[in-house]
Image 1 (tube, one colour):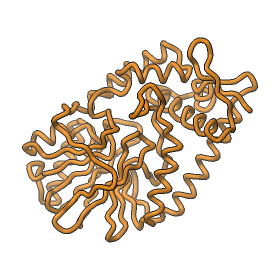
Image 2 (spheres, one colour; image 1 turned 180 degrees about the vertical axis):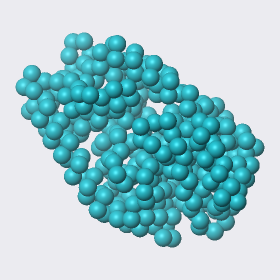
Image 3 (cartoon, rainbow, N blue to C red; image 1 turned 135 degrees about the vertical axis):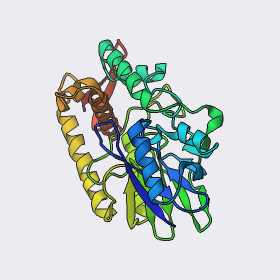
Length: 318
């Protein structure tokens, strides 16, 4: 099975995104890059070097539905004459803006984010949305855990790896234990567990970090030889990376607990202490990280949680 990485530019702070062409029948593209002229030109050039065209693509598979990974899905689907698009059912970013629904705003209110900040985050994501066209319900199909993406010469197993987003998926080639992991595994940085409603009960918050730790352990159980991430270089020593991730998560959790004063603190309070200079999208990501670590600490009985009269969640030391 030929897995061909193609690096595409993005307008985002993370830098270039990796998409993967599976050069087997049916020709499959895993992730698409953002909806920009530069990304589309780079993708066409990558396809040309592999001696393919967009028209040859029969299947588009999304690791998750952030704009840098799904932005070109609709236009490529249309140009490729209705190529099949597959994404996990717990993803929503390919359908609409992530701060558009009341559930998202409610999560930010509970995290203690002030109304003017929530409005600023909404405006920011309205700008981000221009980097992806929404797919209608009939324009994509659902990835399911442990199913197989079949090719003429083999298959890729779908491994649901929630954490970065609820519906994040990785893809395992069991013949040589190669994994395409999207943003579940990145060589240089620890992926951000993004604040999201629970896909089963949107009135609740998705416990992103606890789920992410389970996903990492699941990938580890396959003893991967190579892991292709959504950004940066290939990972050749997953065991070392796994240990580094766990160490970084525990160190960050200790920092978060230390930042909770006797009087208690909201996730917004902790985020502003941890990342005082955060601007733009980083303010939302800072809240996401604070919430994720506070949830984990509460789940491990390291912090108590109370709901204030105005609907904010306040964490206190036990």
